[in-house]
Length: 307
Image (cartoon, rainbow, N blue to C red; front, side, top):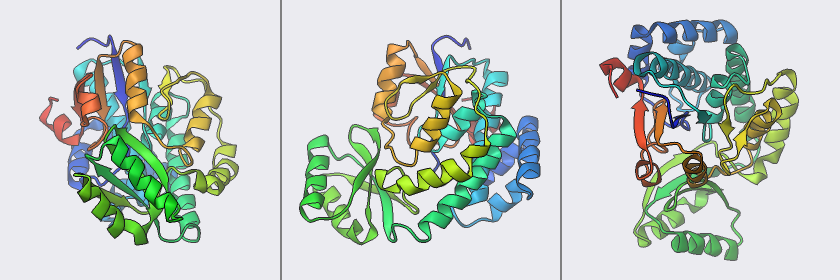
């Protein structure tokens, strides 16, 4: 495959299949090397702790997801001959995009991911009790606006936390409102998907952003990326280390907008997306599949040797 018009997409993080990831690790020499380096960096066996964890977003799970995404990107380069012109990492994927673009060294990215996971857990142990981020699909824009208007009218705090497609969003709100929200989603003909705990991507979490900037990123040096990294909220091309640093911090307080990223990639002549990681969202939604050839590079497809 040629590299013309190709973007690498490092997906957001969700529940993953640890068995598939372990099988890929066992077979792929780059994955074994990267997991070894990650384990040396954090001081524990990442793959083993990830396999034993019962939390989809544990520290080890987050580090393992980062490492798998980078190992799969390497596999796509070697086995498929893909060379991207740019990369993007919606939501959690921003960490992998920063490392792949060499705005951060690998060990720095691993250490940052582990420390952010710890700070996030500590922050939400005390702040915003009961707040969750709920994803739902097949709800058109007017019905979304009506749901949020009713929450505002009732005085219920809420924020849009991600737009995956035009009818697919994530909304942060008190968990006590989930039954009400699910009923409204079903009335609109939609479908509830997954509830994330802790929540993510809301302006109300600005104290967490400041904490991470002060206690994690202050000790890191960001280089200018070797290829453009797209902003996951608006699609702008980021070409300096400072811009990538800001992107990672803003992930705590800004909602990603995948349709905006799609529009940006289309303007830049991208025709093919290589999604490197276990993904159930960004590479599969209609706004993606209608506009690009999608190459899904995940542990299962890599083990088969084809995508």
